[in-house]
Length: 295
Image: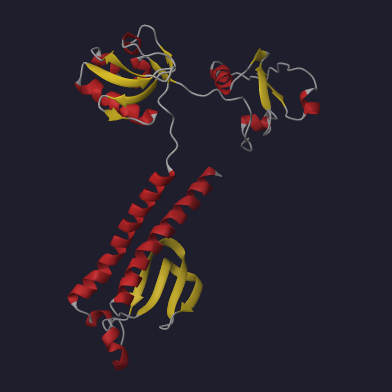
């Protein structure tokens, strides 16, 4: 199902880009007085065809959605009536022909600018750079970072999420012996903390940079509620359903999603038996959780 979804998304994305590209050629041709015979999205056998406009331009959606084209009146391809010769592409000035040719890439470029502008206006989800746990033997602890600190600046640049904070900290780890962080502490006061970066070889080794620095980002605690279950998965075969709340795994209580994940990861290859309490009071009241050994 994931492959089909990805394929469909790819086809839609290509279709949008091709449509905008070819519309750039089409619009420029019309502005330069060139007659457009066909506007095709895709190649191969047409699966949809319609005539539109005063010129009866043929709009086509074809079977192979991997490109497209705009066919213009041109004496080099077919005879052209004398009455329409002035509208042939080959009769236009070089500057006009170049304008028509360049209009497709320019349309895609303008679309990218608009898309990025809309994306930044809407915003991109990100995790606030709030410090969770701090390793007491780490550089972060030596710099005075504490649980609940929100990093607002790394050096002289503001950061809005952990991705930005991580990149800026890495930049300092490569070239400096320390970094000054401006944070909002748990009382809402803006304070500065200087984190030493002297042990550069260990900090830049493989693995999670933030953990080697001694920081574990704060993550809100999520309840162990099942949102969806993939058909044919081990969870589906075990009988888990959307809306279940996991309260125990092999009789061990679970109070958060992270706790459930940790218990599952701690026993690879074994068959854990989750106990799901439904939102329905009648279902939740039926029986206690029992262990099932499927090995």
